[in-house]
Amino acid sequence: MIPSADAAITRDDKALILAYDHGLEHGPVDFEDVPESTDPETVFDIATHDAVTALAVQKGIAEGYYPSYEDDVELLLKLNGTSNLWMGEPNSAVNCSVDYAAELGAKAIGFTVYGGSNHEIEMVEEFREAQEAAREHDMSVVMWSYPRGQGLKNDTSAGTIAYASRLGLELGADITKVKYPGSAEAMQWACESAAGSKVVMSGGSKTSDRDFLSTVETAMRAGASGLAVGRNVFQRENPTELLDALEAVIFEEKTADEALGLMPSTNNGRATASDD
Ligand code: FBP
Image (cartoon, rainbow, N blue to C red):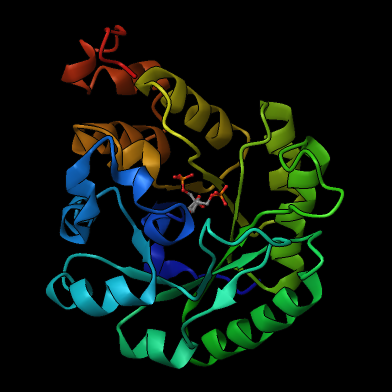
């Protein structure tokens, strides 16, 4: 790993990446709970929060909306992606070049690698091309390291997630994004396996404020360098409040309980009927 290669998308060596590639990966169903999130402008506005170190989007969204936000948001251009309409073995089409990402103003590239898929070999070869081109542009490299496919039934087991974070180190990612493996011990193993390169936790489907902040606190104490989160932010009625709380946990080493106190709409940390 190259020291400080991720400086443009980190703060105090930590990252809070807001992911908004769900329209491609999952489809518009992810915007149903908060229909305003269908409009990329809504999420670009959320990304102007101080806690957000980069916004990850696909090319079409960057082309249309980033010009209005380039002073306030760091762009992480996701170079590949697959729709949920694809029913084959896990794979991800490369839909943007590193040169074009740089032209659009991106400071970092994002790339999914499905280790264990029948398509692992070609995905890693595509990653190689992108990673080396990113180095030429001094752009940070973030790998979405999501083992799945073939015989990989449980893609969040401790051993699989430790292997996922190691793939990021071995293949030259500055930051590797992995699914939460379910415990502090497993997360610590994943972070140690990355041997000094950064590991960030993927947000996953929406959970309660308390559950989410507790998981983030656990991941941070286990050695994670932050979070790459989508639904747990933009599917909330008040994403700014959650970002205030995440800022406290990730950058100020506050506990989840302390951070919940920054969220008036959860009744200062006490769960309410709307706390879902
Ligand atoms: P979430 O925080 O909403 O889980 O987003 C993280 C992310 O990696 C997105 O970038 C991506 O769209 C999605 O999860 C992919 O998740 P999966 O491949 O498991 O459907």
